[in-house]
Length: 168
Picture 1: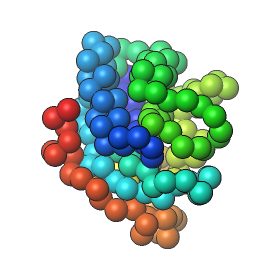
Picture 2: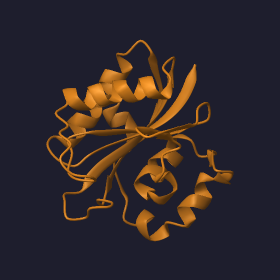
Picture 3: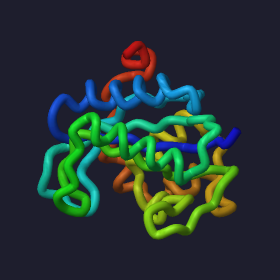
Picture 4: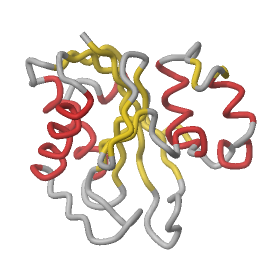
């Protein structure tokens, strides 16, 4: 069994419903067992800033999939939920990224674990810290990475606690 940490986000359409549906579809996959789901956080866009606010969350998933297999499953879910890739860092109905794993490192062109922007994205680290507060990334505690992004962290707001949306 491999443990993966996923970041999910949406900024167009029914944001909360799309995130909940992605979690529901992952839960329904026999190869995946969701261990933790963070609260939802409303966040500013990153990379391309002239777009609507995002809702983001983090998941801990134990899976019999390899990273590449899990990526294919995530891409299927994105497609099912209406994701259309038009521009890098553009708007999206759903985005599911594998951001970290203690069990697998991957440097393929289509999948890099850890995610190359993991330590630069407060919108990923804040929900991740909620579900895995002692996580170490590249030999540093997650809390230390967040202190380097204090300005970005201050712009992240808890939108809904996990208990209120895990039911989907």
